[in-house]
Length: 584
Image (cartoon, rainbow, N blue to C red):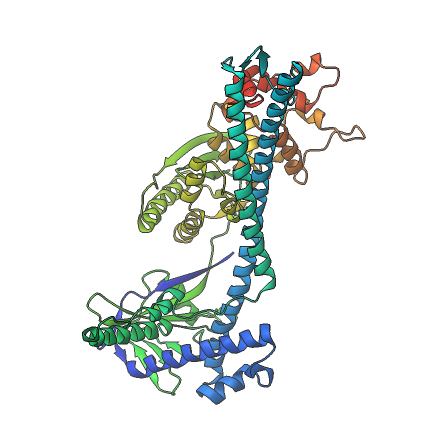
């Protein structure tokens, strides 16, 4: 497995120091490069979406050579940057479509929930109206526990209220629910219109330099009094300079593996980095060195031609607090991840959570040997602090892997849809979701794997928590997260026979033909999906208790639903009654 990594050089190259030769030509090259990139992006946009522009009659190399006098190597770099912007817009459009679709699904569920609550309230109102007219009480909806005694009404929690008082309360609830339903429905229409626009309208052109900074042109330089005119002109000049530097601050020169140095425009001789500018001159960055992965960088110049990789050099111009300009040089290259598929001595598996890592040590047969919990706190922490905290936690994980001499198995998670579906979710759960920095954790795992030469393997974590909840929480007396970590290890090692549900439960999943499904790698997700759906609503700590399989012998037609219902009645009767009845 190859990992793409960008490493900054070990120093800043200040323009007013002697660490750079021919800095003026290099800055001019960056200006021309970015002007050409912006121009080519607009031409590609016109060609792709409007079927017009200069690229209809000419290829992009001809267009760039005629206007900017660039060679083929710079043409390729400029085209890579411009076409990359077009591709990014396409991917961003696809991402927005996915997230808005998930958000619409959440809103539909909310609308349905409000409508059901409104229908119940209307049914109660209608029953009260009939009772006042005919003197008979009709149950408003199934499992409703409201009872009427004369001019009094008894609620589900045995509270007694006056009938007319409760009726006014129901009418107020109906008005609130109608208003809420109208607001949510209207919000859904706006979101649906936004999705329609994303699908049908052309994407907006990219504002290079940033929309926020560009919009300041409308406010900077505007004065109310004549004496402020000089100050405003100075502010306008500063804005123009800042916007120009923002648009021309970076340049990337992708490489080719056919080049001796991995790049036709940049040459590294072991000490200095030489860059060929657009005007034909050469800029030299003295004492160029990478603080990390320098050995892999150096090996690329001494290896055989068939093993050589392309190297991309990135240049960024910035200013420090004293307004001194400097250049950051970085290298983007492919690194070979350490791979090892040997499970002869077992593995370490990890379940990732917002405030801790749950680890499990497994031997080659799938037996649980040891457990570990690594806790951390990300609440009210800055981005840099979160990165450092997670880096230290991941380092501790790999220390344990090195101590046990075993590879790591982790879960591969995509939170795109979950993050987009939290509009009406639990506040605490939403907060925990925002703290779940999976991409930073995954990046730290990859870096530690490269540094420590300890292999890791990602698996699909679907239903691992559910399997751990049913199979291992009660057996080992562990938390659901530790049980999930153990299950992740079993999935990674391919020990699916240890994840099969109880035979009595599996027999309840017969098909219409009366065939018990076979538990295997291909069917385990489907089987556990059916079990999870049936047992939804049962809180996880009740699985520390015994599942009442004896109820199956008492039923004429035993089913998985009957087993789940018995658990709810036996272990959580108060909660069951509360949720199934009318609330005031």
